[in-house]
Length: 70
Image 1: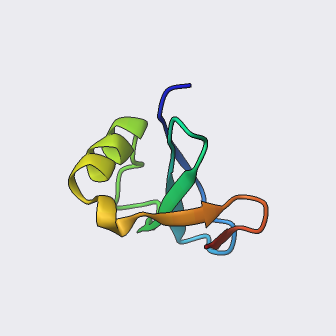
Image 2: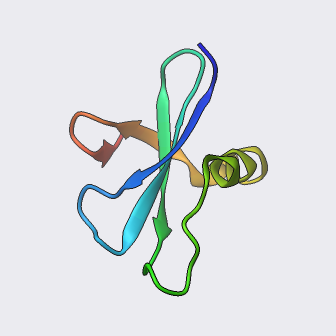
């Protein structure tokens, strides 16, 4: 399994997206990204990969079943 980089809708906020990373061991990490839909361009998986590489401390362990950070 490769590391997977995704941009998904935030489960509780329409003004945010989740930048989500699933590592090779299956652990999921995420960070919120403020997005208003008009002025910001929609981030790509490449943007998530760049952010993961350069600002990894922003990402927290994430429980997908509850939609909460661990």
